[in-house]
Structures are given as structure tokens and as C-alpha cells.
Image (cartoon, rainbow, N blue to C red; front, top):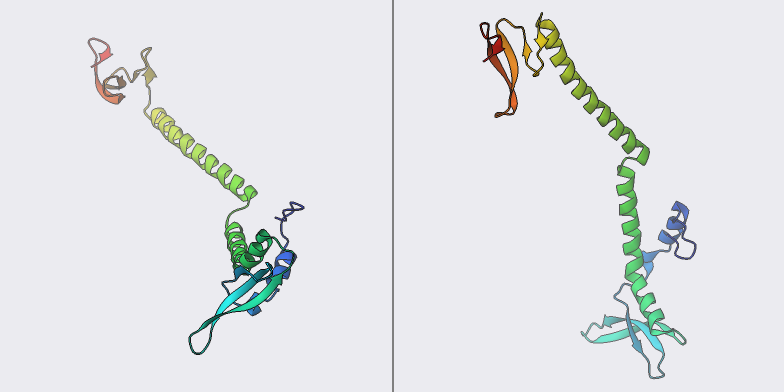
Length: 172
């Protein structure tokens, strides 16, 4: 996102930023100091062949604020890191389904679930229909009024088969 216009970075803009030859920029870390006149210096530490450390000045900032200089120094490391992160996130987004694909997949899964639920009930209905002359008593018992019944066992909270008592005319 461009913070001034709030528009997404285009591929062309990212290519333009990548083509700035960061590999040719002086390696960091870039450091900040002041010279004897109070001007901000951006420098890197180097070592001589004899092992002595010295400052190689990259920039002298006459009118820059401390924040300006810190920003310039951090850009050496931050810009390549941010470009890599943009690349990683775009690859991650590309691997994800689009919103439309996700909605289609969710709708399909819901249809499959409804089909599965319906087929379960269809199997039950088919079994009842194939059982022949059966009926449902007022208490919900499924019975043929001759040999057995299917009753709701309130204690077990499940359907159970009960033998039919022909003398009493009820399941037991």
C-alpha cells in the first residue's frame, strides 16, 4: 500500500523498487554519528589489514533531522526485507482459494452434508416401507401388532426392539 494514496503496490511498482540494485549498495550495518560541525554522518565501520577499525563515511546530511538519518540507515536493511515479505505474502495469497472458490466449496460441502443427512433418512424410510404392514401407535411405538415393536427407551435415550405381548396388546 502506498501510504500517501492508499493504493496497492502494482507489480510494475514492485519491479521498479526491486531493480534498484540493492546488491550493489554498501553492505551494512549503516551507523549514524555527528561530525565536528554537528552534521549527521551515515557511515559503516571497516577494518584495515592491520586490524584497526575506521569509519567509512557514506553520507553527510547537512539539514537532515535525526529521524531522517535513522530512516535512511534503516532502509538499507528494511527495504530488501520488506520486498521479501511482500513476495512471501503474495505467494501465500496465490496459493489460497479465491473468495468465490471458497464460497463454492462451502456450498458444495453443505450440499454434501444435506445429501448425507437425507440419504440416512431415506434408508430409514426404505427399511420401514420394506417391513410390510406396520403402524405407529399414538405413543410413537413402531409396531406390526404381532411379533415385535420399536420403542423409545427413555432411560437409555435410544430406540430399542421390544417383543409384542399379544394378550395385553402392547410391547414389553
